[in-house]
Image (spheres, rainbow, N blue to C red):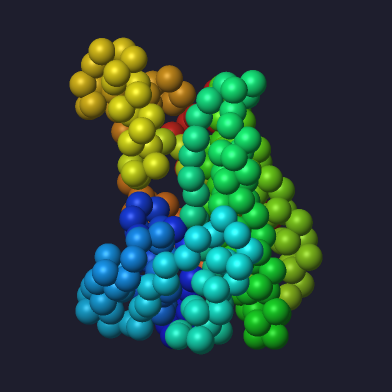
Length: 260
């Protein structure tokens, strides 16, 4: 069912995004990768996917903190690989500080990349999906789209907003063959977590490995970081016919974080 379709996966030069791109490519989907890195780093990733999975792949470097950056990315993806049938809004950044000390520029940047970019990509991709009568939009939110944590005002606001955006677009598109869902991962083994692991290790005087476990246990009983490939597999399922009636959902993959 998915073979030959085109997917745009934002923030896919590593972590959840790259794992998702590979899961889609393994099912015959053409994939457009995206990152901030230059073509010298991104193009080899695309060529590797082409060689491993036998599908077309590309890479575009774009700054998603501006509407113009998102417009450039979506246009480039459609020009190179054709109509975007699957949109995975995964790009995200993090910054932590107490709310009263939170730098205004950092607030604006986190909201722009984590929330506004998903809105702009969605509005640009929807017309072609509507014309085709089929589409899949998956927003990679976070467990912080469902609960809060101290010192993460911008991140939590953006991810809660992303869950809200998901519900609205799902309602608007439910009769058009387009599903829109959010997935809400907990502690995941991605570069985005590295700073928090290092900070925990420094603050508690422990090793990096001990810090990983310590950080986990502050929120969840699950004993391991989540494998990005597992999240990619969930996104692949949400693109399938079996998930055609799943829309407007915010699905936690969080090791029982939100069960408490």
